[in-house]
Image (cartoon, rainbow, N blue to C red; front, side, top):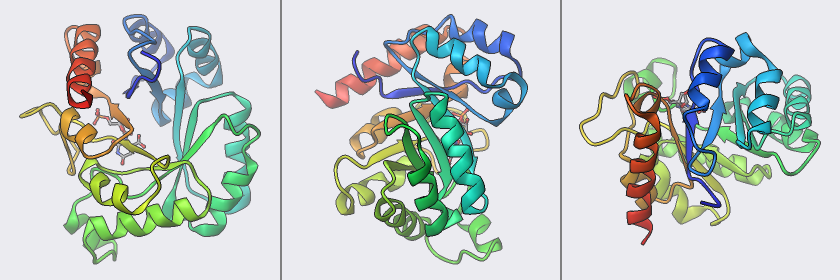
Length: 232
Ligand SMILES: O=C(O)c1cc(=O)[nH]c(=O)n1[C@@H]1O[C@H](COP(=O)(O)O)[C@@H](O)[C@H]1O
């Protein structure tokens, strides 16, 4: 598979567990996301090691700070050679542009998180965002696109609307993916893998449904098969 659509969230607490789990995966069937917990405990060497095994790495540290700080962090991430890195769109236009301009190689995709997929309408109301999630996501996605970013993180529920208004090559990365009747855990705005692809998602971030499965490789194969069936 030339362009695996599944990004496995390697949400483990240490390098040993992460490498043990990654050895069960197939680089032709998935890419790997390294987030805050694993990066904090294992650092950049783990990224280099996983890249040497042929995995594309999405470094998910969701930078959100003043423009200069975020720009320097994005430059450091692209120096590592990661495939993808992310920032929070709520950091605003100046931060997004600084981040985009700072990438040392355009091979690293920069995407912006719109609204985290665990948030529902009442969570948003409590922090002063008194609009429908789709309206906020749409506004932030247009901002990210206008600032020259490569795409956004959104829920697959919002993907159809974004596909209507933003160019085809703007990348939609969708976490909150759950099999039909699967445990939602702490996610709120969820979709099945098939729904996500039908809705126009480019990449599906999937953590616990794969990491907690008894046979992660089999689960990955099944999920890829389900996705391929939609694409036919
Ligand atoms: O940027 C992300 O990857 C992300 C954004 C978002 O809005 N929601 C979200 O769940 N994620 C990440 O996607 C992964 C989802 O994991 P599971 O809920 O276990 O499938 C986690 O590693 C989250 O950090």
